[in-house]
Image (cartoon, rainbow, N blue to C red; front, side, top):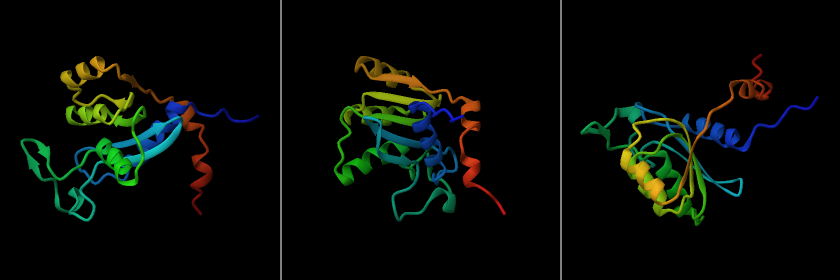
Amino acid sequence: MAKKRIPWDQYFMLQAILISSRSTCERLSVGAVLVRNKRVIACGYNGSVSGADHCTEVGCYLVNGHCERTIHAEMNAVLQCAKFGESTDHAEIYVTDFPCLQCTKMLLQAGIKKINYLREYHNNEYAEQLLQQENVEVKKITLDPQRVADLPFADYLSIE
C-alpha cells in the first residue's frame, strides 16, 4: 500500500522547522520559508549578519530585552529574495513562530498575502490589526504527529 503524501501546509512547515535548526540565536530558533505557487522561493533563519559574530559563539547582544545581533528569519528570507532578484509579491510565508510587529510590517510591504505559523509568540495586537486591515490571511498550522511519524525520515538515518 502506498503511503499518503503529507498536505502542502505540513510539508512547508516541516521545512521551516528544519531550517530553524540553523539558527544561531540562543533565545529562540525560528525558521521561515517563502512560497509562491507551491514552490519555495527563499528560506531564512534567525541569526547574525553573514560573517559577524554569532550569539551561539559570543552571547546575545541584548538591549531592552531584545537581541540586537539577530536578524529575524522572516527578514532573512525576504532579503534573500532581494539579493537574488526573486519577487515576494503575492507569496506566502511559513514561519515557526508568529511574526513580531517589525517583521509583520516588512512582510506587508513585501506583498506577502498569507502567513502560516506554528506557534504563538508574543503576538502583537497592532500586528494582528494590520494583517486584518490589509486582508492578509493568517493561518495557524497544526502538525499531525501521526503523519509526521509515518514520514520516511528513518530510512535516511540508518546508523550502523
